[in-house]
Every structure is written in C-alpha cells, then in structure tokens.
Amino acid sequence: MLVISDLAQPGISLARPLSFVPTMGALHQGHAALISRALELSDSVVVSDFVNPLQFNDEADLAKYPRTPEKDIEVAAAAGATQMWFPRLAEIFPQDEEIERITPGPVGELYEGASRKGHFSGVLTIVNRLFSLLEPTWALFGEKDFQQLFLVRQMVAAHNLPISIIGVPTVRDLDGLALSSRNVRLSPQDRASALVISRALIAAAAQSDCENMVEVLRSTLATKPGFVLDYAVIIDEDTFAPAVPSTARKRGLVAGWVNGVRLLDNMPMSVAAI
Ligand code: PAF
Image (cartoon, rainbow, N blue to C red; front, side, top):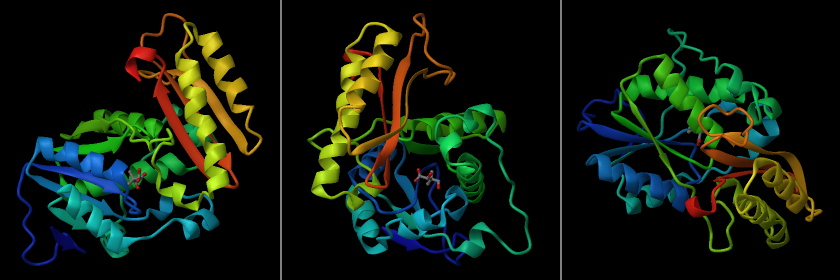
C-alpha cells in the first residue's frame, strides 16, 4: 500500500476506476468492511485520513478526537487498500483558492444537525473537496452515520456528480455495540451503559407499528441511568421525515452520551432486516 501526503506529489498516478473510503482515521473493523466492499468494486482503493476541523463545533471534542496514523496504515493495508492518503491542510484549504462551501438543506438541520450546529455543512464541504481532488467512481460510507450517508447522496444528486455512493452496513462488536472511533474513550462500565442503545433498537424493531416502536425505543433507553438521551426517533429512510404507518422503509435513530462520549446508532425497523 502506498502512503500519500499530497495527490499532486510527483510520480503519483492512481489506477482508475477507483473506489474511495473517506475517513477521519482511528480506523477499526468498520472501516475495514468499507475497504473490503470497495475492493469488490475496483482494484484501486484509496482511503483518506483527515480529521476535518469544519465538522466539529466543539474545540474540546476536536482536540480529543483519537489520532492513530500508524495503526491506521496497518488496518488499511491489512484490509487491502492500495493507497492511503493523508491530505495536508494546505491541500484541502489552499491559500490561493476559496473552496466551495456546501449547505446541507433542511435534513441537515435535523437530529445530528440540530445538536451539532454546522456539522453537516462541514462534512459535506470536505467530502465535496475530497471528491473534487480525487474524482472517484465510487465512494463508500458506513450506515452507522445514516444521516451523513443520506446527505452525501443528496449532495451528489443535487450537484450531478458522477460518483456512485455506496452505503455499507454497520459493523458491531459481539456484544452489539456499533463500532466507532469514539468507543476507545469508554470504560468497561461506560460500555455496559452504551449497550442499551443496540438493545433498544432491537426491541423497537420487533414492534409492528411506529407508535410502539418509538415508545419501546425511548422506554428501553430510559432504563440505563448512565445513558443520556439526545434523540430517539423512527424515520422514513427515503425522506428523513418521521415514519408513519404506511412508511415502507422505517429506521430507528438514536444519539446520546455515555460519560460525555457521544454515541450514535441506527437500525432498519423490520425484524427480518436486522
Ligand atoms: O464519517 C467520517 O469519518 C467523516 O464525517 C468524513 C466522511 C470522513 C468527512 O470528514
């Protein structure tokens, strides 16, 4: 695997078509699953590793974000990536060029967007910038950040970008916790509290109507005092509007904190789909 710090470096020529896995580093098996899926699409798989300052609205959260570049190289290489790209700040934000700022639209103001002002504008601005530098044929995103995946798809459609966006199902630990770079900050006791999230989503998915799904989701989450709820909702996957009985593809979304660590998860709300 080739490690690149600047795409314009002399001698860099990327085999095309290529698949792209954008990350903020702290790679885990969820990222490895994205890389494996990318390898089914193309022989050339570029992983970017860039902690995007634009998507943090809290300086402390940005400072605490785990940075593990050596381990990231190992995980990406073991998963079969062909190039690992560590963009420099100057490549992303050149002094002589104003990069295009993306506004996410109304869905970007909901849920994660409501709790983290400017978050999705920051995400989409950087994803668009990475896309314009790399021009991938496919880009892969985890379903764990389901709203991000929705908004990236929306941006690609609105801007007519010739890129196929591929969503990859969430990878979980054996105990059910969705893999996340933030999990390293959980103590064993925190982790025990965090497990209420997947438990609540599974319990909700076993219900047959939306009202019961919401009720069971929230009441199960309330059983763990160590978990502080931000939102727990059932949405229509295709529009992000609240689900109604006739919604074909319902999804439960949960976000909250355990001991100050923000955790997100989601699941399709049909027992057969889990
Ligand atoms: O999901 C992430 O890791 C980030 O939001 C992304 C897509 C790499 C943009 O910084």
